[in-house]
Amino acid sequence: MRAPLRLVFMGTPDFAVPSLQALLDGPDQIVGVVCQPDRERGRGKILSPPPVKVIAEQHGIPVLQPPSVRKEPFFEQLKALAPDLLVVVAYGKILPGALLALPPLGAINVHGSLLPKYRGAAPIQWAVLNGETQTGITIMQLDEGMDTGDILLTVPVAIGPQETAGALFDRLAQLGGQTLVTAIEQLKQQQLQPQPQDHAHATGAPMLTKEQGHLDWRLPATRLHCQVRGLDPWPSAYGFLAGKRHRFFNPEVVSIQSAQPPGTILRADSQGLLIATGVDSLLLREIQPEGKKRMAVSACLRGARIEQGTLIT
Image (cartoon, rainbow, N blue to C red):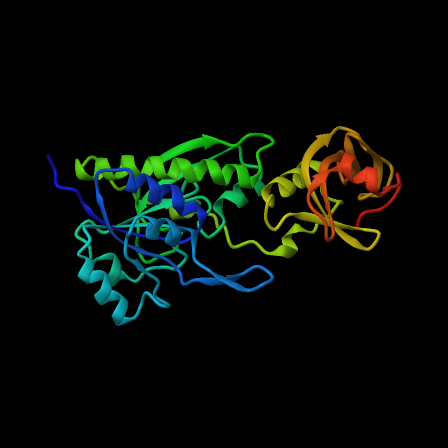
């Protein structure tokens, strides 16, 4: 029977939690967790720990939160933990070569796309934004590039036609944890064969901005459909109705081409808002008026009138 590996887990946000939990439930020993420093959150600017730190402390695992991974104190702290393997899941910073070379088995990463497609911070959202029908999980060896390391294992999944980035995020987070456990077991058995990425086919997935949510109704309804789903729940798609920002969710493409200008409300009823676009129309079933909660359009109409013919800008 093989001795358990000594693992150091490096991760910060919600996406990393299922992977950490999968390792906690497995045979290997997590000797330390590394995550980003606590951040101020919410309107009250309350200092809050990252989700990964919360889980680690619940299990009595030492937590390191270095302001920089490139300075000597952190390297010495990591060296003292004597890890066999670094496991990195959405940590948030590129690691230097000296750090990656410290464990005998190097460092592996869980990434939410089928590399080399969608390298970067928001691979799940961009897959939906771009209308992809398939994505997946990649386990790769880390190098000093941005998601450029050799591929160890991939698991593809289909993207549902109405699936939001948020729903896909949750699915891939769980799959990432499952795939990670499989990969580490195969790594122990020396069954993984690293495959270099084809860099010619690489695409980027940069961080999202709030401004990307502003809907351009001149685009085809199919493009807007992907935009609304890809930005749900954050930063969310929006337009201005009567001078106030309204966020929109739960879209459906409707094969109706209107002579009205794009952005015109063709219908407002219990089914939702039917909006004219550059090609076809877009039905939006959920809305979040400025300063209010997300709700069904039917619920919104009970408290506020939205007139047919109004233009959303």
